[in-house]
Image (cartoon, rainbow, N blue to C red; front, side, top):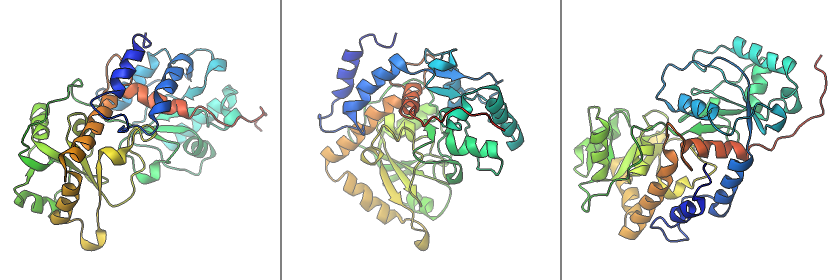
Length: 352
């Protein structure tokens, strides 16, 4: 069903008011044909296990529900490219995980072929490394799909994947205000209270909300602001998806390299967001330093427009739908899994 009018869809996608040389994709020449190959051939075998989610609106259960109702599933494990290990990630203990992996090891022949490297699981918080052999193999070899952001010690770059945060409402890009009222906007909770917030509040070029906003109020703030500020690691970065899709260029303040951004295998984050280092030795970043970075980015309307346009184009891939649609968040996470389908398989052996 997803192949209907795909050539037209791709044509419109690639020509989204951007010059041909300007793209948010790491490899646009391979992304779209590979996506079609994924739809036609990618198969996942799910083990049987009860699933319990306490927050049905979050991206974790949205992904699992979409997967279990998708055409990617196969009941023939010999056809499978990857194997899905479903378990509730809420208060899961290392002992129960060890028992689960041990059962897979002895009851099925598939785990031992790759030591779990062609298996994946979903854990919003991410799993820690442990001394138990079963848990260690699960964490070290299997692909972990977690929520963004994930604690550094619970995420393995180039192997693990993060889910785009769930969004409130359908994708509906707004027209930007012709005259921005604010250089930057900080949503309540996006940056924790510290000296930078006090400086931003005192600067007339920034809008800082001290109370939570509903979705419409947040979108209106985005519409009249050029940049949306987030602090990675300590603050709330869940609104970065909304900022992208509604045309507010994300500014991410961080004290370390970020390796768990959603869709990192697909998107050129450096071209559609601004990353500002948090100088620990000087008690953080100062507002004047921050403004210099932002003015460099929007020094010319063409440059700012290009950065914003790349983000809006990428924002289409961050939308979760009850019924998955082409190129939405579910399908782009599946595409990243498909990229990880090639694993080393060992000769079958009996486990002592």
